[in-house]
Image 1 (cartoon, rainbow, N blue to C red):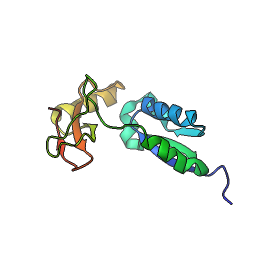
Image 2: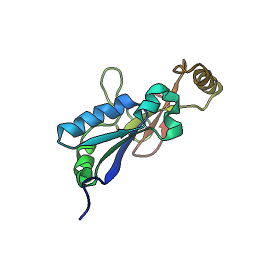
Image 3: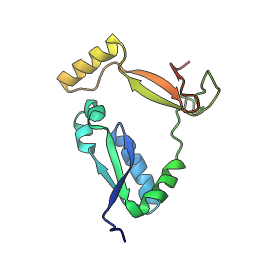
Image 4: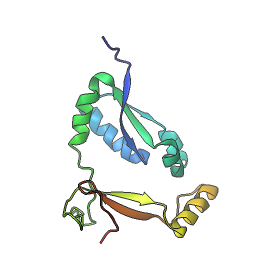
Length: 139
């Protein structure tokens, strides 16, 4: 028999605000949730990728139920008027948004933010289709 104290990582987020939203949803279903690394990310959000993000853990006995609850939450990106973003290649609405550091302006903003301990003043985003894995800029 496994102990109630065995924890299993159920999700990882870039920001603690996202983690708290999902934590609330899990707790509404009666699942006890533990958050890790949220204070580090709150102190400086630029460290999120370096430490692997904010992690949500649940008791091992609640893991399957937790996955089901999280699976019911729509994780895909929407336009500002609430419509799904559509992949230009395959037409799928299963598109997620990610911030990227792949140009000089983004990297410079990251470095300045790191040294001044502020959020970056410039962030570039890319969209990735879960269906065909096509990467694109918002159209």
